[in-house]
Image (cartoon, rainbow, N blue to C red):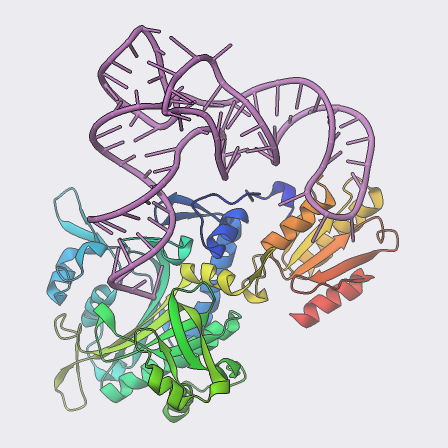
Length: 444
RNA sequence: CGGGGCGUGGCGCAGCCUGGUAGCGCGCCUGCUUUGGGAGCAGGAGGUCACUGGUUCGAACCCAGUCGCCCCGACCA
């Protein structure tokens, strides 16, 4: 992609409404624009990141044996009345009427819709277990939206719902999602810590939040440092093996203190965690999983026949990841004073290609050749071909934060070499194009 | 919803107290010069001063109301 042709409205100064770092950087880097309070327009660069996160989340959901569907944003109030939540949910739910004066709502979550769907399509225990998810926009009319996309009113969420015959089987579904979440966040380049949580209005009796460490996070957290050193991705998981999955969950939940301010107990923390392993800081909630039994299946009639021919309500759980929130959360966790430092898996482009002397024949030729070579290798590159000063280009590249910066300049164009540097390192190296390509493909 | 603050070219701000031709920096356009960390000079474009009403010869400025946005708090993926 040529920078000169891209739609990338960056800002030199920070709009005054933006207070926290991720919001400032997202506005400056031309990722989003605010439309109205808590509601954002996603621009190409921001959308690329969100799509990558969604794809990665999707991949891990599928790997754990879930099936993707897509439920509507607009739901019927009747369904919510039937489940008994219409009145309970309160003003956070956006209620609307259609032209026939029927009560509708913009879904803040989807337990009702999916439980109803399930009730109408599955009738036998032989079709269980089932894990169904979608990635869809939600609306919650927050009292106070803030922190940019981290607490918007409209947000993109992945929500998965499990259906099982017995509480034990449901626990396995819960465990599968637990492990899948560990993998998902690790692949996104984040250290996520599972913490025991309150179940809140979703209901139920078993729940964990997944928190990533960020100094600007909303929640105060206390945990055992050794949780941060666990290597999740090297674990080979067989999701069909109940004992194996349960063991992984156990290894992350037992013997490790990890609490948000909701559940923090200072005496217990001091007693259970040796002083050298105590971590105290702040974090951002990026995922939340719940087991809630028959809370929705009973009122909505999601029943199946068991092996003895008895009709029993299914056991359910729900599992959420804030996809749009993650865009901001990753920036909170990955930035420096110059700008964003994207983890490669979610970077909107892998390479900032800078031609410091547009108009110089050798530079232009080498830059073109380099861009084409990168594209041919399937590497996403944003080629800054504008007639701007070198300094302006370097600053913007730092702000946008792609993993690599490749510079073509009169210093090295004649020799056909390129100066390459990682966003997070200070040292650059000057190498021939072929070698640069090899370094990039081997490293990522 | 309680408390605080703010609405003036795309962005950041001054002007308001003390009413009298709407200003600055950045960005944008044109030209020349420059060229490895947000270049210089010259010229230029761009604004119903959030909205409505009032006071006044005259309102960005004073008064009243409305709307919008941000921050702190209670609540949340």
